Image 1 (spheres, rainbow, N blue to C red):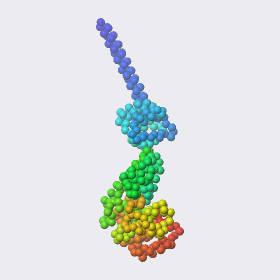
Image 2 (cartoon, helix red, strand yellow; image 1 turned 60 degrees about the vertical axis):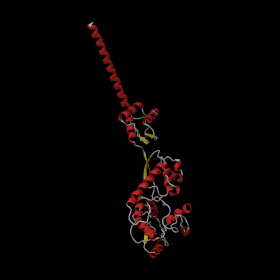
Image 3 (cartoon, helix red, strand yellow; image 1 turned 180 degrees about the vertical axis):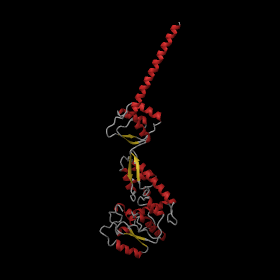
Amino acid sequence: MKKKRVGILGNLWKFLFAGVLLACMIAAASVWVLQTALATPLQLQESGLQLQVEKGGSLSKTLRQLGRDGIINWPRLVLAYAYWEGKTDIHSGEYLVPQGSTAMDLIARLNRGEVTSYRVTLVEGWTFQQALQKIRAGQKIVKSEAGRTVGAAAKALGLDEGAVEGWIFPDTYVYRSGTTDIELLREAYERMQQVLEEEWRAKGDGLPYKSPYEALIMASLIEKETGQPSERGEIAGVFVRRLHKGMRLQTDPTVIYGLGEDYDGNLTRAHLRQSTPYNTYVIDGLPPTPIALPGRAAIRAALNPKPGKSLYFVGKGDGSHHFSATLTEHNRAVREYQLKRRADYRSSPAKGN
């Protein structure tokens, strides 16, 4: 009886040992498979992989698709690893996965949101329509119906079509593939609101503006009148002093803006007398809206004009201006710089100046 018990115990230990050994072998195989799944380079072409993760996309869906495409092995194991590491959250956008990347590299890249970025630059002095066209032409930008026209874009921003001009901040914007035109436009709109609020808080005293919007209008005139940074404050001073004295602003860019598509590049005396809501040769005060996208420097100048006595200025032909305190002096400058124009006359600074 005693020998029989020893035999049973011996067989039990053999079974237990075999079970433990089998479990160890399975565990070792699982570890090997997992390591292989995570550390083996993905099946990529020499140029790598351009992977687009749509908005609302999940890691599980992305890995399953890569598995079906033969790019990744054991997608479920890779997903389990991501859950274990707490890296299942991924960012939408376009990813460039270089050749030699592993599944572990891919998970880290998706989790960090290392998407390919694109840039679009909106230039000071452009109109809203020009900015909208530039955005819609941006690489990988999604063109929406809401951004098809100025009126539709204005509605999407919560603005009236007639009051949308000037509200887009000119700057370089970085965006991801799949960004819509309206999303980028809204970012530029919110940026302008922020900049205008910041500059308004730091404004000087004795200004003729009833609201930040009027300062935005003035900034657009300054932006269109000069590309010389050193002149912005002085031009702002001229405009502010004229408003205080009840003088008309008489600035050509407002005439041109009011003409719209009728302007052919040649500004005539008849144009200066033509009645439009924007022609500051015939209207008093500021035009009803901005005429362009002003940058921060122009907004700052509008809110902090340079003190002085000048009430007039005229282009000198090299992109700069001659400033005068009296009409007599101004007329002399007009004869010198305008009536006897140089062959290389220009109204804005040469590139590089």
